[in-house]
Image (cartoon, rainbow, N blue to C red):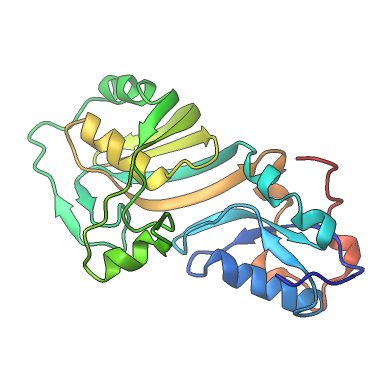
Length: 236
């Protein structure tokens, strides 16, 4: 990010599509806002296979808020396939089918979901951006290196069951910073005596910023008019 005076300042709530990275979104927004001299960042990475709310911060005042915006609670809607684990905990990795002679009944699913509320221990996926000795874990994993990440404490505020039709489980998760929904899928599956990997993930809200007020990346105006930006809060 380059610090330079700019009339562009505020937040742009983007609905990130599947298939691009969060930095792809930042580069597109920065280009539409006027180029490299526009200081631009985002508040919370979404994997390429995930879609939904990505807060883009433009200008010096807004980019200073990135860390505090990342502390806001997030809401995700996700579909989990309980028939197999995956080396990446999603559809990108090699599937590892699990033999489940008797699929869990819905009351059991409800009971297991309740076990993950509050502060819980979670190990990030090997294919994640968590750094080991300065290197992103996913780069090491792609080279076939043994990746060992330390468990951390994360917070799950709520889990709502939307649909359960074996082997698919669709839930809405409200959580704190640092939560990996891919890891949660693995944890839920293991607790059910099954597999668990994500087949779909959509972030529907970050704090008060929701997908209803987001603009799809393909619809971001070029050039970007200042009036489409939301005012940056004094603090997130």
